[in-house]
Length: 195
Image (tube, rainbow, N blue to C red; front, top):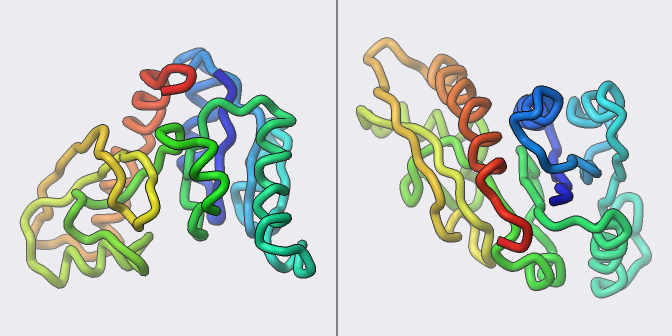
């Protein structure tokens, strides 16, 4: 199975996936990184591991029609025979043609227990701030499939942790990141070609 990772930020989950591949925990090939941010940490990680990467954003392709722009993604994915797309901190909505072509083959990880604390604007530290503000006693992570709505796709896996009284958004983020790095490679490993 050939995998493409989409990422926009620091890339810690991308690194965890690549380390799992290097240790033969994941047998699939990590063939490509697509990013909308050419100076993000994920690009540096791709360089470190010798992974091909491409910056695709409207800044790079300002003059393309919507259809042409979406085909930039599809052409690159087809060139590398990608079977599964893994989102690892990708800060853009997936293009409709990509979603259609890869229906039920796009994974995302969310740093809370969906359906709580999901939706537009709920990413990264924003999620943890919302959890702390709500005074909920449990948070965790969700790995799910992507559909047309933010954070509404079918849930594949969840793992919970306690939110302690001394936690703030930063300590909670660190605790959940440890879970993400452990369990995202596990779910990727269990994914099958075309499923």
